[in-house]
Image (cartoon, rainbow, N blue to C red; front, side, top):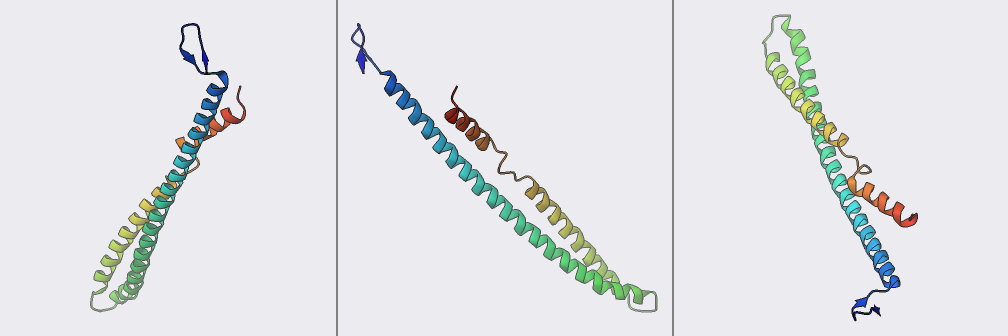
Length: 135
């Protein structure tokens, strides 16, 4: 450090540049850590959406089974028979609605995940650009 005519200490140019570089490296490390955290969050959201989609597909499979069981009963309805098919058809239709809604919500959640289009990634790109190619 140098002293000026008033007796105060002034940092040298070398120490200022060193501090700027240290701050830049620390900022890049923090942005990389933020990027890793966002990736973990996106993977967790994707996992949750896939689990929900699997549950919806399972419900749809059960609905299909009920509707397949009801189909012969519907055909049997045209011939004098017990109208038990209506109960099976109602349960099947409710399960189709429930499963379809679940799959729709899960697909919407999966589409909302975009890990490479986050503010942390954009800031990291900008800082790397300024660090590698300073003007």
